[in-house]
Image (cartoon, rainbow, N blue to C red; front, side, top):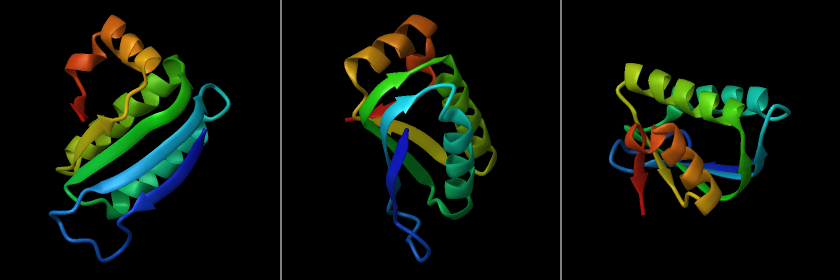
Length: 107
């Protein structure tokens, strides 16, 4: 898993979303790093944090746990966490687990 970039940094306006691009596998080997990066991102995120998953090739149960944890922490800070570019395999996983009803998905 790679965090390609995060934007906006620092002096962002509250109306502009914070966008994080993820790529590769979100698995047991990458979840700790992803968790930390998302927690750090929440420190400077605007009111809307969007995770772009269009380049994610795999998401395991640990990856789902990280997404749920990030969403919980975001909500506690008044931040909406949304997903975009959800690949079909990940969309199917979200649907099977019922998490498609939990996450805001933007097109």
